[in-house]
Image (cartoon, helix red, strand yellow):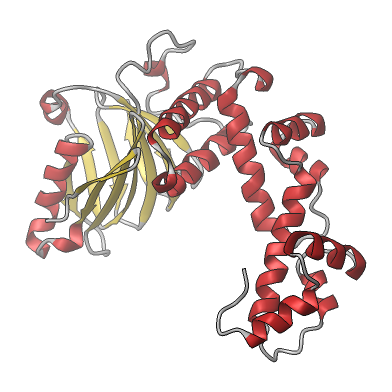
Length: 333
């Protein structure tokens, strides 16, 4: 049975894969795992898809974040399962894939990718997981509702409005932290966990925290901006103004956030483009692409700017980098 608890630096992992069990034992194994590690529930195989439940949970600081992929079943929590729950907690559920139906507190909701729901183990729950779905759950500490500026019990079963400007930032930040958590030392993991809680609180209150005074929101914005740069560096129109507009903050605020991280937006964009061009040059073995073509494909607007930036970063011209790559069995770094 794959239900392993593996310790990493600052991170504890919890793993379950229904495919590790015999077909007739998968539903029961899933229910046992969920009751022990997530929340007591009742599941039945349903639909045309085969039963599947695949969980990877990571304890980051004191915050458990789990990613669940599944299909082929319907799950619910009735009064019986609620009474069997030894301790209760809230969870923020981030829907990443699929469009399942969910019912909680009498509300029937068709969830969409990017939606965030607040659920509680104290409430009944029904979830149609017949079609493939994927979501991430942030299990919130029992202390979490204390001294907050909202009543989480009123939010249970609701979906955070897509008009909320912090919703997308929160989703991006949690997913990014989950993927990068293996590299976090214990001290950083604790800080990141607190950032997630603060950012979630800011998303739920009627008047979100001011960006200037929120370390959590500033960290999330910096992370979102860096990933936006990594994804769109080849777009020659990518500029500080475009990133700030996408994040719904001022250019000045974005520049201040990058300065706090010992960088500028322009430097990060240039670094991403140089990294892209270096990879293209190193992997270009006879494709015929010219230096100019690679410069434009990497997001630079002209050859002179590209060569000047490349030399400053790599200590050699793009042509020399390419020659070195062709003469070496391994690409230069």
